[in-house]
Length: 362
Picture 1: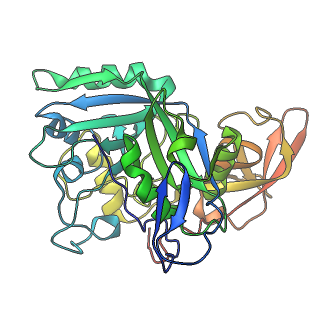
Picture 2: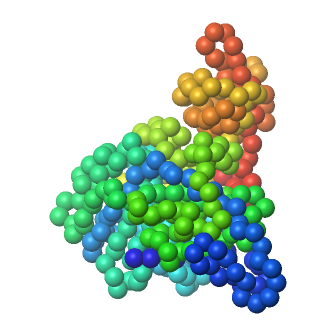
Picture 3: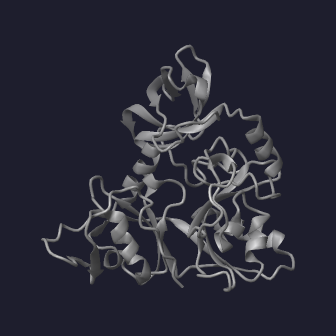
């Protein structure tokens, strides 16, 4: 089944004339010389996929996850950021949805992306669930624990591959090109977390993404993680440690990953209370070190200190000179450092990502 991607979600300018693709080559429909193919990197991701299928699949996931899964399945009114009033009364269902599973204390268990495979409300819900590969067994057990007698089948998809598709800078009208490629594979859709993360591609194992996306090449996975850290996008258990991280501190609302209007789900009470109090003192932020360090040089959870030695937060993960850290918003403009083994330290600076909402009181 097909998941067609929207053509303008990357916020890139449209070409004034249409293009069509075929066999990995692009041609103009009317006049003029064709431009070079868009430069697009395809990154193979070490993330796992589960298929959740059955007449009660959406209802089942609705009670376990932070986002409104019913909207993924059947559509509904768009809502303003932070769960405000509806912006429109009629909108197509999204093709992918970011969400989290929480424990009863309201702390994160798993960061998840859902993909809709069925094309209409008349079809039986057929959903792919993306999670950290190291948590695959744990996610399966979590789902089966709450399944009880529901008409839902949960099974790993070992025959599928997951790719991140990220355009190079100044690559032109990539969104329209990728939209035309959507019918060549199982899923090709904009990443639901933020436009800066490009697109998500799901193929059968035997498919070659370079034959699906014109002008693409295989990227080094370390460059994908560098891009994530530069943008402050958390992904996986190192960035969002299970039973430790809180969803709003992990920018879940900023990444379209939570509904404040859907009703009850596991872990809702603390999350809703924090949201309505309107005070979030710590958030995950991109950080840059004063010098590149070998992988593993900074212990996970290392304390980040101000110049006076006061705690400002904790380092989560990173590579070379880029990383992501949970920091007190009150301290992010101060000189910060991490003490390392051997009586050494490394300085770091934090920044506010450009994709964050421009006007927010949280």
